[in-house]
Image (cartoon, rainbow, N blue to C red; front, side, top):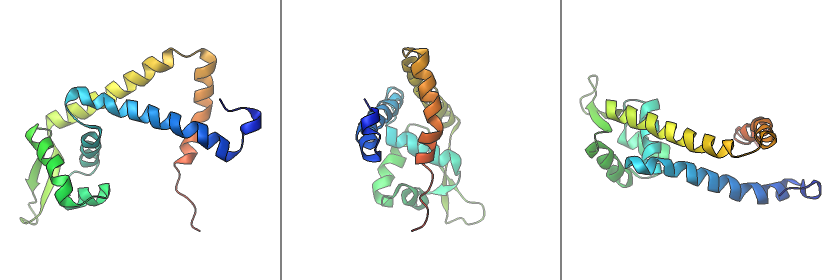
Length: 149
């Protein structure tokens, strides 16, 4: 636990990092009971937020090669969660979009993750929940882009 003696950025980071990683890993696992890996859930979310995204663009967003991503997309397509759609403007372009089942699955994943976290938060004392709520702005600030160097 972080004490006044360890309020250095490094001291907090050493204690916060493993906790954040374990919580994130556990939240990501909530997709698995729906037959979707956490990576596939991320792909569904990217396709939902950017309908028409090509396989190459999706791979670029994920920082991996299109051939590596192709198997994941094929699996999501075989599950009926996404479909490939030929562009009406450029018949050579094939984009990805969620199917109704894909949208439902994504909602279920999000609800499952929220439920898991809410159940854990309910086990905390009122004071502990209040401290977490007060820490939210600082945690959000960690995700803000770094200023140019």
